[in-house]
Length: 348
Image 1 (tube, rainbow, N blue to C red):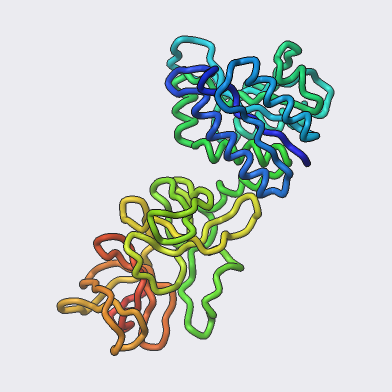
Image 2 (image 1 turned 90 degrees about the vertical axis):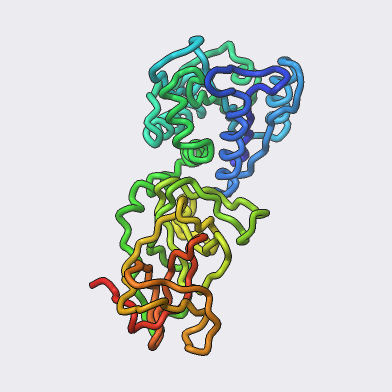
């Protein structure tokens, strides 16, 4: 499907302002919608204008969508009804008339955003006076994510995030319910400890979570501060730390569940500091008088990465002969190394 997506208003002709700013936030949601529609295989164009007056702003988006031959036009907005509001108002979608191609899509969007976020569902509304609905030559809708002055709306919006809401909108447009899988992740089985004979190191065909994100995390293309953001891992989302030696300060290799594709991601890197990541420990260090060496290879001749002390908890990934590969807390973030197995008591 050819789809035109627009962020409402611009900073010269600004939108609503309250606890949050409409123009600032609708750009974030717009970008997420475009990203996830593209991942779904749709042909998407961004028809958001630059800085200009109101008339130019509206004409630009509509004209570009018409010239593109779009089959659907969606403009992302945030609404405002009062100077301030202490409660919740909700989310809504506007269309030109009932009975057309836009109506079922608009219903899916407002229902999904409401269901997945908890925003009050204000339904699909009709207006023949809105420029973006009157002048477009294809099915069109204006999505009002929430109200900028409503304290509860803004709380929910900030908690869920622009990326998540953009994904809900994109999946509703293409009628994909994949985002609902996020609510099932906590029930997926924990990662089983492997033996060397049972694993070839491949993890891409399965998803067995063994850690949880304490905050939203960026999945990175490399373990550095300068990186490409490959999506978003949400607060409280379950992820899988990969069973491989890792001594990258503050970073670990993981996979996470790709809702849009219904399968695990490719290998990515995430921040491994203890304040942002919690691991599922399954073993205890025992009978150690001083320190148990963390090693790069399963050999007493291997270089020392670090150490753990008696009583510390680990996440054991697999056992190779006399060694266990485990993720441990290294004081400046989690790392993964080999430990002498006789000093590791794996939970029953």
